[in-house]
Image (cartoon, rainbow, N blue to C red; front, top):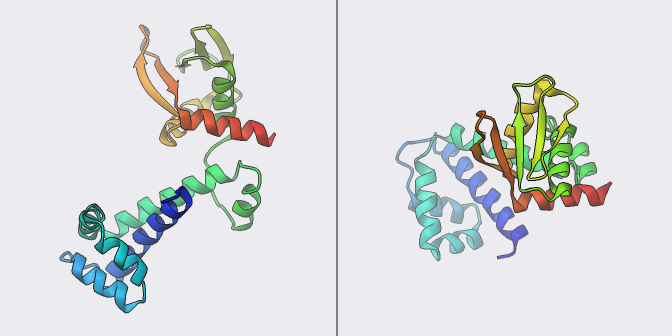
Length: 197
């Protein structure tokens, strides 16, 4: 399955499970067989067949049917917000994100600048030094530091970059400052943003 088809199918399955659970008054004992019948009744035959032909998918959906509907919806909202936040910075998609009224683009200019600096440097590690004034980042092994524009939000930006999977925590240095590595996804996203500008 190509990535676009997989992501669309993923979103569709989650949304339909939530709709099913709401129609069933979010009963605790929702069963896979009931969900498959519901899919058939609502003419989602192709999706029903995909589920019936995949044991792994059946197990995961059965697990999802046991979860709280609002918890699943909140996680789905977080995924949607993350996609919009990323798309809002990619040429050709940013206009759509804005036109749809994307409310809270959480990937700040400062976070993007940090990611781009990390990728451009070809460094292996990013140190985050929140306990100095002004807060800074440093790239290793070259040992080059750089000051961020708004140190108050450096911790938040680093947390968001890590949450998106663009950087990953590796260890603390001797002073207790966190050190991060760049992920492939982070490097690819930084290059895509650079290509836009």
